[in-house]
Image (cartoon, rainbow, N blue to C red; front, top):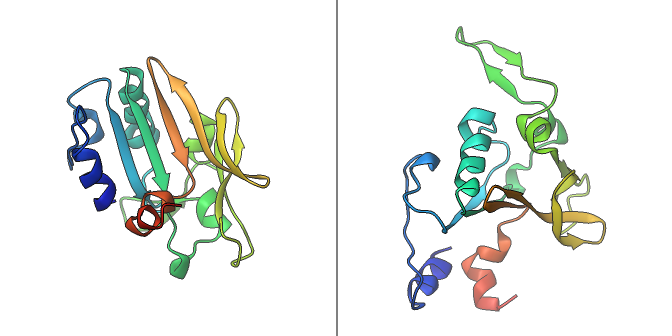
Length: 170
């Protein structure tokens, strides 16, 4: 990601910056917001905390790219992707909605290949209303959907943005 950031910063007419502010604080329109290495288990897909802010940013004329990553050494299960448990205030856990907000709001489901040897372990099983941008065989790896004047791109992998991938030019 550093190589990508540094390279884009040297292109005339392109301004790059890192921000650790909440998503709603994106200061301009007509920009690309790139979120790399998003762990689909750790991100809070809550509609008010992630999905709606991303929609608002895109609707103002921005392109939001969310590229996911799962750690192959701590590989989640399909149940982890499907049914999140939300902590209760007293410390116990309760089952969340049977369907994650990303599935109910955006009609997107994440799937995990049961074969650990496959090169694309995470993919989209459902993407109703989204344009498919990349596939590997039958696995959907990248999708895009318009929101207002902008769009959201979801990628099942961040590997194309790593320094190693950029160096290998693949």
